[in-house]
Structure formats: structure tokens, C-alpha cells
Length: 227
Ligand SMILES: C[S@@+](CC[C@H](N)C(=O)[O-])C[C@H]1O[C@@H](n2cnc3c(N)ncnc32)[C@H](O)[C@@H]1O
Image (cartoon, rainbow, N blue to C red; front, side, top):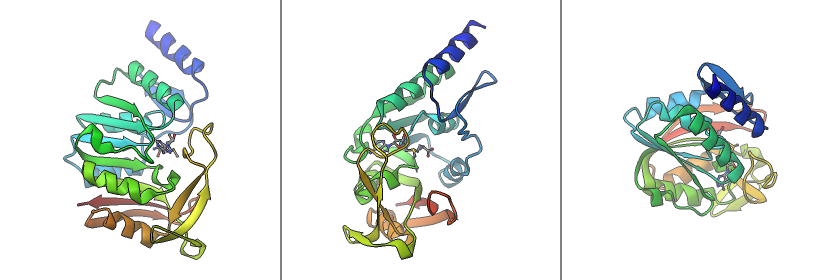
């Protein structure tokens, strides 16, 4: 009873929330429920033996805790302190001990500094970066497997070339927006160029798991990459 009150007051004190969490059978937080997110299904199908996983752009920890329920150890990297404070609060309320959160800017941070991982869960992060090819190259040094879900530029909207990749520039929404990138703009390659970028980073096998061309925020691909 006391635990429930502490949980409820803690969620109230940290409003607003984006993600929904179920703790001791009760739902708290926002409306974004990742329980049946097919990207988690793709991750476990593609990397069934993963024991040490890395999540990028972990927000309030919803995917992190879903991963941690099925692998031995998860590290989540998130750029915003406010998102991390929420994630750590939920971690305490869940009693989840196999998760470690880190605050870092993935535009420059090298995930290999945290050791080797079996696979990376990178959903909703890459399209926030101005130089996505740099993170992909660093990820390759940290893990042999990558589940990547990201928006890409439609081929007829490619009006810019960066580092030899065709795509378009996207304006981010600033540091106060919890879902946004940390820089003022990002770069979205086309799908063919994204796949080339992943291969150039050192992933020899790329499997497209899902390609949602009518997503309201722009075409969204989920792909699994292996060295
Ligand atoms: C669109 S949300 C995606 C959240 C979650 N991964 C998902 O797929 O639902 C993007 C997340 O990445 C974080 N983020 C954006 N740019 C980042 C960066 N350069 N370094 C670290 N985190 C970043 C944001 O703070 C936010 O939590």
C-alpha cells in the first residue's frame, strides 16, 4: 500500500510523462506503451542469444526495461538529464537491477567505452543526428549486432549530400523538447543511402525487417545489421 502511494506520488511529481509503465499491475505515466512494440520482437528474433545489450536514446527507459526483462544486462544511453531522472525513478520503483543508465551525447560519445555488447537497440535516435555515419562506425566497434529503426528521406526529397551520402536536412526542435535531437538540425539519408552507410560502417549483412512508407512523421525503416 505504502509502495503504491510512493509510486503514484513519484509519477505525479515528475510529470509530464511520455511512456506508460506497469508497476505491480497498475499503469502509470504517459500514453506511449511499448509493450507490443514490434521492434522489440525484431530485436529478440534477430539476436536471440544476446546477453549484454545497449540501448541508444533511452528516453524514460520504457524499451530499456522491456529489454532488461529478457537479457542479462542492459545499458541505456540518453542525452537529456530530465529523461534520465525519470528513467532512474522508474528503475527504483521496478527494482530493476540489471540496467545502467548513462548520460552522453551520441553525436560524439564512443559506446565502446562501456565495453563490448552482443547487440544494440537503436530506435528513434539515428535520425536526430547531423552525422549519422559517425555513430554507426563507432557502434560497429561496440557490438556485432544492430537493430536500427529510423526515419529516412524519400528519394525525391534528397537535396543534399553529406559525407558522400544523399539525403536531406531536418530541423530539430531544441533542447527543451524531450524527444528531439541535441543539435539544431539532423541529416536523413535516403533508404538506399542508409543501407550503404550501415554497410560502410562494417556491417556485412543488412536485413530490412519493416519499411513503413506512410508513417506520419516520414518513412520509417527497421533493419537488422550483422558484421
Ligand atoms: C524520438 S526519442 C526515441 C525514444 C525511444 N528510443 C523510442 O524509440 O521510443 C529520441 C531520444 O533520443 C534522445 N537523443 C536525441 N539526440 C541524442 C543525442 N545526440 N545523444 C543522446 N541522446 C539523444 C532524446 O533525448 C530522446 O530521448
